[in-house]
Amino acid sequence: MTEQSETAVLVSRPADFVLQVRINRPKAMNALNGAVLGGIAAALGDAVDDDSVRCVVLTGDERAFAAGADIKEMPTRTPATVLTDRRGADWHAVAGFPKPIVAAVNGYALGGGCELAMSCDIVVAGENAMFGQPEVNLGIIAGAGGTQRLVKAVGKSLAMKMLLASEFIDARTALAAGLVSDVVAPELTLERAVALAGTIASKAPLAVRLTKQAVLRSFDVSMAAGLDYERNCSAALFGTEDRLEGVTAFIEKRQADFKNR
Ligand code: CAA
Image (cartoon, rainbow, N blue to C red; front, side, top):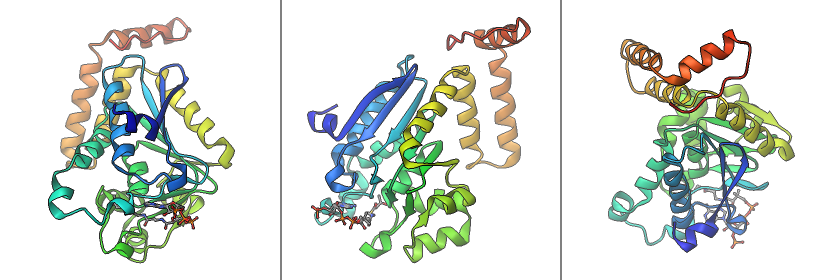
């Protein structure tokens, strides 16, 4: 992680096996500049092979999860830099992260901020959260999954309204549409996200990992191919130590002690 990226995101351990990554540009509404994206990617990169991390919470502050890509970095960007700079890899580090990520969203999640939340696996929103894809105001389109993931998250008509008219939706609308899983008082958003992450971290890590993979695969393949994949994952897990531990713990009426094996 570079020095700049280190201050652009703050990394902490709020619970056992849980890594928290906080976007830290409050004066810029947590706009996603290169340092923030690089910082998130680096924190996740470090966590990939770290057995002490089983789930990640990604958050911002009370006013903004993230107000989008940093517009002030945009004047100098060209088609070539958009295609070739490291942002693509940084975004991939989030979407391709193999362990679950819970987004804790208060305030604005706009443009790349909404896309960042959608790249996570579960979104917990504060009642003050606002989601939007206002890129057409800037003469660009959503560039980190907004035209694809939003449609799948909220359906065509609402997605089109957000993408074409730049209308924001509030937390309750996002909940009704399926974009978020929980809506809580803003002061409880992070607490709820960390609690959820802690619960996920208490489950069998390999089963969690393959569940995430199988669910994400459902977006890309036919039902038949997805069911095949699920069956193969299921079969593979029957060969793990944690499967034996989980089943034995149930039968012995005790808490399972999973080892990620
Ligand atoms: N990039 C850079 N700076 C930003 C920013 C952004 N996306 N969003 C907010 N800021 C900065 C503002 O410039 C301002 O800085 P200064 O004090 O130095 O002027 C500071 O954050 C506070 O913002 P506002 O004064 O505008 O606060 P507000 O409460 O009046 O409005 C807001 C908040 C509705 C979020 C408004 O700032 C806004 O509309 N921001 C831009 C949202 C946007 O268009 N996002 C999409 C970006 S494009 C994108 O994300 C592409 C992609 O797909 C990856």
